[in-house]
Length: 140
Image 1 (cartoon, rainbow, N blue to C red):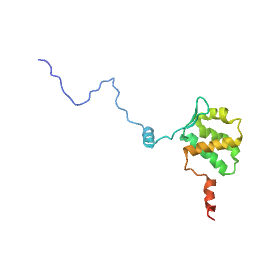
Image 2: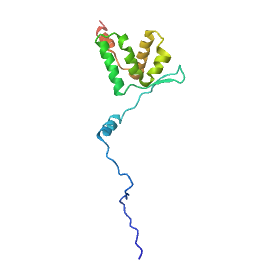
Image 3: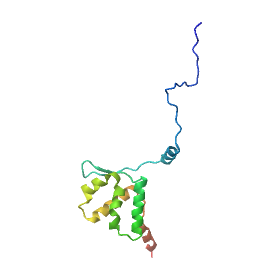
Image 4: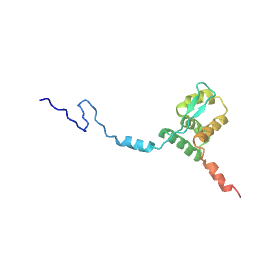
């Protein structure tokens, strides 16, 4: 008598098939943190070929560097002394091209205006301490 095939709803696995691996704690944290994240459009400088693309500074290293620079300026360090690390943090991977192709030979005012324009692109609602402190004098 021939053996009847069995019908089973249970999935069959063989020794060579991988089993589903449990996600690690950090992977779970990252997925949860990034679930609703929508990146902003990059800041694109199309005056050069190929265009220079600056991504939103969202990496922890870039954010820490920006905050450090802002804290130094708030503590009395002249802006001129922190502009290079600030520019690196703001531009990220595009720094070398921004520096060599655009800013190295320009007046310092151009660099400051450029950094402010990038800031406005990525954080249009951000108000500096100087802007906020001016509110106290309005309407007096």
